[in-house]
Length: 137
Image (tube, rainbow, N blue to C red; front, side, top):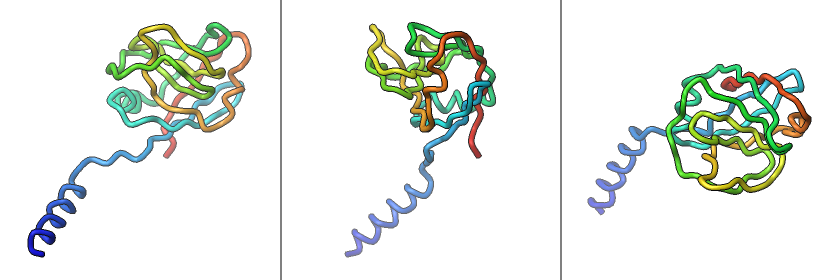
């Protein structure tokens, strides 16, 4: 019994002092409309959030994504090759990508940053666009 109480006290103390990051949300605004996105919890997204707000000139690439350069590289994370409609990713260490179609990229793949929760089809049109990314308070 005493061990259970001490164990519970230690776990409660640890849980209270351990950093907890709630799902960070961002707004992506453009002349074509606004969407929100939920970011995954990673070193790359924590660094991205520190850089906000950002304006990023984006160009269309392969009629599946909008891509633009970040002002500085983000930390590298595990990569994946598959992406879905609404995936926010990082190609290389400084290329921010919004996928408006599903697909697969070649090796080494993309770093997953998050998912758009709004209608990402606003980006499904040819041509460049400048986006603004900012935290949702």
